[in-house]
Image (cartoon, rainbow, N blue to C red):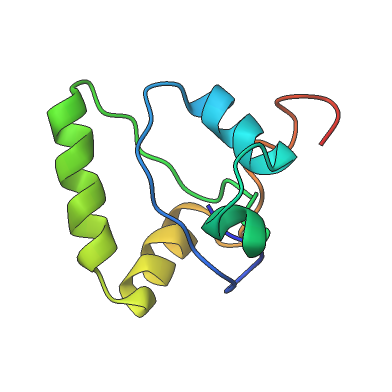
Length: 90
């Protein structure tokens, strides 16, 4: 998730992506993502097992910011909000 193109980044893992994105978009939880307006889904990867997802999350959090940006831009060069049409209100 990102606040804007080249903005603040957030990496997390969830078993329910639409619900978690909604929480970011509506500011349900106070904290880092709310404070920095991190509400745009710019990249995601689906995993079949929770341990795989957690391992991927840990690896990605250790990556350099520049490598995270490269990863995002390979899949989403314009940093479009991939969830912009999911809810009809955000």
